[in-house]
Length: 289
Image 1: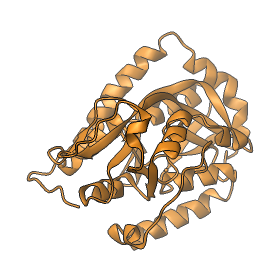
Image 2: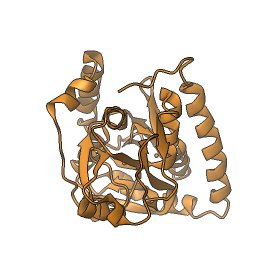
Image 3: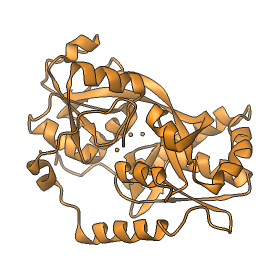
């Protein structure tokens, strides 16, 4: 379905053992650095290509598979820019926090599929109406007694959130006020910390979390709490330094079409099925911290 500076900055907690859980493969690190260097050469090429980046693990809204990004928001944004006469290229630049930093510096033209926060408005124009919508939820171990009916229920609990992820300004604010927010480099790392008993719950997009549990074979070990944390729109956000700002009127017109809601529903079904086909559950239970 968030991975940056937010409207309400969440306390960032990194521990040495977090970094040891999932070291990035050297080839992956080098590829990301090479891509970042290429993007730094300049966004919005003269040929009308707009460079964008997105969350690599927010399925089915956006996700990375074999070096390419897919998702509902990505396909919708490509169509909107095509209608404006531009070509959108969505690159895998690595973690969501890096994507946001590159847009803030003007190295990439746009964020695809991000919540609207005051901090992001400082460096990007939020394109309205929204591309899609996301709902956040809490994931806990199957044997956890945790119940969530009101924010006070989270008092003193360790809640994992991906580094740089916003779950919407109000959810961010309430989590920072009531819980001990523990930021990890990825959603998968948060899942391992939850299974190891180092977190009481993980806060993430409901659908993305459910898809991740299925893909990693953890549906019997982890469950999602029924009550939502909250929902908020997901927007295309264009860097204020980008020439692609010129496409705004046409992109907005595309998203305002009466039949966009039907198109979005169709894309959601197609992309959810694509993620499932790319990430089948393991043949045998393999969920482990």
